[in-house]
Amino acid sequence: MSAARVIAVAEGSPADLAGVAVGDVVVAVNGQVLRDVIQYRLVTDEAEVSIEVDRGGIETTLDVVKEPGVPLGMEVESSVFDEIRTCDNHCEFCFIYQLPPGMRPSLYLKDDDYRLSFLYGNFTTLTRFTEADLERVLTEGLSPLYVSIHATDPDVRAEILRNRRGGVSLRWLRALLDHGVEVHGQLVICPGLNDAEILDDTLAGILDEYPELVHVAAVPLGVSKFNPEPRMRPHTVEEAAAVVDLIEEWQEVFCELVGHRMVFAADEYYLLAGRPFPPAERYGSFPMHEDGIGMARAFEAEFAGYTEGHAIGIQPGFFSWVDGAPAEGYRSSRWEATTDMPRHATASTPTPSVVQVDPPSRRAPVGVLTGLYGASIIEPLIDSIDRDDIRVVPVENRYFGGNTAVAGLMVGEDLARVLADEPAGHRYLLPDVCLSGGRFLDGTTPTNLPRDVEVVTTDGVALRAALR
Image (cartoon, rainbow, N blue to C red; front, side):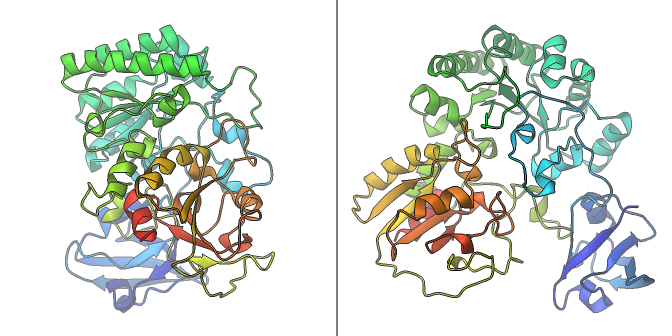
């Protein structure tokens, strides 16, 4: 059954005035059983909204009268009210298979749901896409979408996805483009599998078959110490350099034939290859910032003040104008308003109970916590402002291991190990990208850390402001 539980109601909002309460389960709106927050937004745009709710086993109808387009003023528990469409591929590089045991169950869910692609920018392979899905995308204007391509050769793609439908499911990509849907692509590059000649063939296939794609991100696979696949391994320096060279060659071809660079290598490739990042103007408006493309140059521009105090950062997308559900994906703020944990937290107790403490003085020395990749980007920026009271504190990721080095995968266990060796009384800045609902991926919280931390939005503007 499709249903959504109300988790927040804004005081004085149309929903509040109609009697909607936290804990109500929305059974139907205007007689329609809703599947997701997308349908919710369309139905609740109307001036008169009738909400059927289940309240403690008793069903009641609440009538809302408001101006057309005015939000109801309530949040529901999830963006998808029916079952999330799970992934039936078995990609060797899938990071879900490489997670350590004992994490919360939701982290092991593999989705391949085009609705989450629209809502959050999740990538879908389209192997479970149908005619009915295409009709809904076109009817409701669900654009942009994000598609994992990996290879355009049918046999290679089927092998990569370990799904025989992988060889034919890109027909849906062609159909989406034919109907004017904005689509962004992604290539996860696995050394020895879809790099080198196969990557060259894939880029030729994109130019020949899908030239309407907005952009394509080429990203390296992540390999944790729990990786069960013997063929999956990190890139060598030479392999990373070869990917960068090939991408940059094809950028010139795309510029000449379609008018823009189309395909970009992730920042991680430049770090792996020991190459300087391309200049900021190469990335335009940084449309693939969320995929690690141009993130370093964007951060630099933000930190230096070239963006006039505005973060390029993550775009809120659909959730900037819909109030139906909190953004639980990476387009949202990592520090959710519903958390009961303060931004200044301490770990004087082993449980996540809140302990109020006086934060360190703003004049105290500062340690900027980040992953190994982030450290290589932030250290030159700190050097540029000539402050001897600020240092970068790199956090090696032993929890996941392998080549995991991004700030977004830092966990409490590793942070606690590093902070235990750092002096007390200093200010420690923690990027919010590693938190979701106030928790790290290992289930711990900032209250479990041995030093106070200040949670800072993950962009150069916020970091510069925190260091003033």
